Length: 604
Image (cartoon, rainbow, N blue to C red):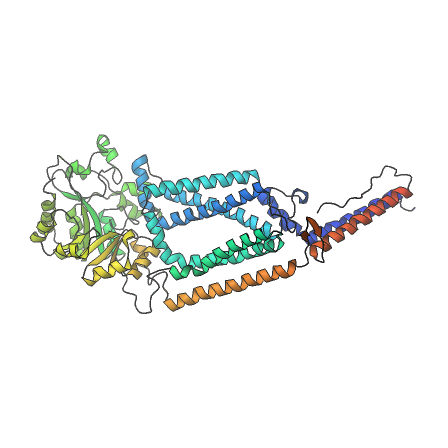
């Protein structure tokens, strides 16, 4: 038996649907675009999205605003992420600051970094999806959940930057210093990004029907591009220097010993510092109520001892108001295993863990004798006792008594940092190396017989270091624990640095970034030339490809020979054939009087 007219009609319609589906897949890259639109705007089906026709804007005003907000959020989040990642040198200070305010330990710095990195990744992926959709000629539609996510990320970035800027304004100096190392690579990344963006920019530039829009988008793009091309002209880095002019690596001074490997300001910490190759030891000295100088950085014992267990009612009392017999009762190491401030406690073996538990508060005498035994330099801050303390007015002479009469250290090994009564100290012991923590003029330093400066690393300046060195004043910077910051200090000619990371910095054989001026010039010139070549090629390609696309004249579309014209023509043919076929079958068969006809061309 032959097939009925209805079956034949359905068969022909089925075949036509297959042809139409193949055409759509051929011209719209259906799976790829569906994935992009689905992730960006939850438009997983083709009929939910629209293609931006030549001469049309890529999105509505609302979506344009959302896209602009996405770009702003991307850059603000990037700035904060870069700012906080470069501040890793001071994470320990940030966490202890929060401990002092909140009363409990938590690695807030790492949590903040993880949150910032997660939010930046989310925003970056959204931006990549948007650029890919634009490259495919699709109209943008951002799902409402992503709009909320963008607003949350923007609020986080602005508030976190504002709070940290208020609390740690010096970190912006760290950010500027980091550019002296990272700027060449940031320039390379920025130029590469602008080169990739040339594809969607060129695509929409040649499809715009309004000259004003074309001029605006091209002018903005070229302004940013040329600014990036010329950025290296204003860049400065001490690590860009002629071959053979790099000086010796800065001497390493252990900040409170080796606090990443053992509890700070303990005998074990100083022994570890000597073991890993530290040439100097730094500490903080406080005088007990009965006149024994001991090592303690904080004004109270709460952070680095178990005073809350032994003297629960004196947790917030000044450390200087405890007698030495009372201080000997405290553990100075158990907190290190419990809080693990540098996430390094897991590297300790069982014997080392037992040793940590048995650490006590050391005296200045024990510290000086250990340094003398290993022939190490020492530098310390001396805390003046509070009012009502028996040694409040004699704390300087009491400390000198320990150096001269109770320890075996040579005075020339001591970098004397306290500024109080400096002239008297110099008369009593001229062999002490007078060290200043003030960023003063050369004349003032020479008047006080200063031979070394002890400055925060934010004051790093190659020119200033050279000026001080010209009059035999060496420079020590504190606290430098990140390899990139140590590399910068090395290139700048710093003589010594105080660090928490002796075991890490000691392994560096050369600065992380070091180039000759000629090598750097060649690098950025080649980068710019290659980028300009590819961008020009992209614009030429899109100009050539879009020549045959429809253009707009007097608000009417005029079709020329081109891929979009061909696509619309083929689809029109398909729907016209289907319309004729169906109508013909309907008219010839009395069994299908109500079969609908297809007479309109489907929307593209």
